[in-house]
Image 1: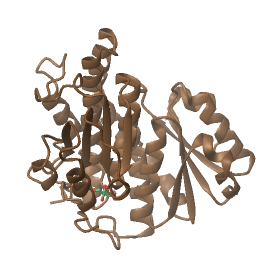
Image 2: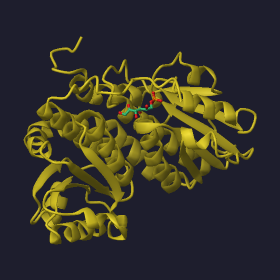
Image 3: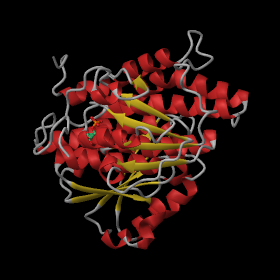
Length: 363
Ligand code: F6R
């Protein structure tokens, strides 16, 4: 049941504030002032974390690496499961191995998990389907509580994965003593406010629809981001290519001048994900290099960011303010809505894109 929406994907995008709210209530204490995870999750027992997944779930891991390193000072390795399982990765006894999967049945991710059995100190998973193979074969499986996801392109599962991974990173920071109590409380407060901010962010729908009609004309689209926005640039490009069939690539903003800038001309829209965080000025300077070469920049930022860096851009999307730690969850919304409306504009099969399956149970 699409609940009045044209596609499951649209419904699942709109459900995000609700399901994220449910995941947050589940993993926080009743009064919301602490994290409540199974007792087996104890980050004082490990010294490194290896995270493995495929596709969108991998981009959730890539984002979480920034969180675990910045908040918990925990060394993190990430890889896509199809590479990890065949490259003889070194898993030391002080490692927790964490597998992220919506379906919990992805063949490569499951094989990567089995590779870590008997090698890692602990096998954790972050899954949507709680009865899945990956959940069953983990020491601890943490459900993301996104509810059934039907659209082949993952949306609400991605933001719920991010939410649970951020809670894990905060728990790691607390266990390892790397976060001040006031900052810990501040981030929990921000987290509790997130569903409301996500609701507010969904009001960008009309502007994304208008911009998407123009993006639908493009043959190639680039996505740029720095820091936590870099994985999100990948997620935006993946979402766009899988449902609109437009060629899209993501680059770390700072990598632009090492090659990809050669692609820039007046026909190539460049989507810049840049909340006004500590890296904003650097991203804006990369964006100006694009504009100097007649690139068409779509800047996605908050109101201050648009005021400071928005001059001369082709298009802009104004996002609500949020703590820089939480912006990857929030900025998933424009990434998803741009892909969705571009696909609708092109008339492709949004919920069942060609050549793709919801669950990839063969390698
Ligand atoms: C993209 C998408 C895929 C999946 C990937 C992993 O929108 O849905 O990239 O994220 O196939 O699937 P799970 O999470 O089920 O392991």
